[in-house]
Image (tube, rainbow, N blue to C red; front, side, top):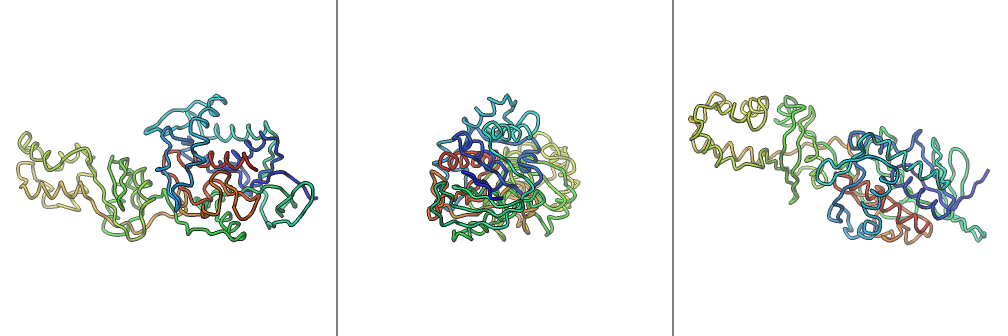
Length: 402
């Protein structure tokens, strides 16, 4: 049996559910379709299952896109303060972790349940375990103004407005795919090539054994690549390098690029080593390094870089020794062999060309009634709640027009 709706939204993730709830407030009849058995799976696993749902310091500069201006309109009209007000309305306790990052006190399901409650309050239907088989643009003059027909595993639906909120291909184990890009191409839209981002690096060179041996060790560092720098934690893994600093810089890294890591950004090691040599000459270099890093790191780093200095005291170090140690710790240069890919990536860079879409309404300029929101678009935020804020803001922009 053919069913008709004002709005059909493909994707029951952050952007899709937000759009459904907001469109429902305008008395639009809304249906959300998703092939998964549960809504909002990425919400549930995000932020270590605490959901970093927004950030106090949302700025357009925190987003990457071939058109860096595109995100400004939506972000200025639905701000982090608007979403925080919604969280407060539902009585969800939260806290700032660092640098404006807001997390649930309890669990990510608080945010998902809030969105589902908002949908229920306005009668927006969420239909799961439903796969999309075909999408057609209708040529019709019927009074209801139906523009699109969607054939699904449970029947056909028609709608005036069709919203693509399917996200990107990151974390395919949760059901993610490039389906939204296929829809865009079907309607003749340009799609920029995508790659995994906010993703750990893999090393296969001589640094691999160091990373494996230090797996689980975390250090506060700064990292640079292609003119961009981030200061945050580095986490050594069995496969390479992870942690917030590495995820951030992965946004700007391309295959074959070198990254530079300052393992002790808070100190001037050339100066500090000379001061310590004078004040504490009998302390071993190994133990001195352990005070600034960890014992394990000190031993393994010396074994790999300066085995001859392993038993040295500070008094035995020459000026050249100290300069070399300082330079290597302040400027550790390495070429990752790659990233862990979509398997563990939080987002995908690239996507539907924003020049094809209205920045005010998210409607495709060449196809009235067709909308793209959230991660499927060529807008990618930094780590720290920025991608969720883009989901909320782009969803609200579309919801006011569908």
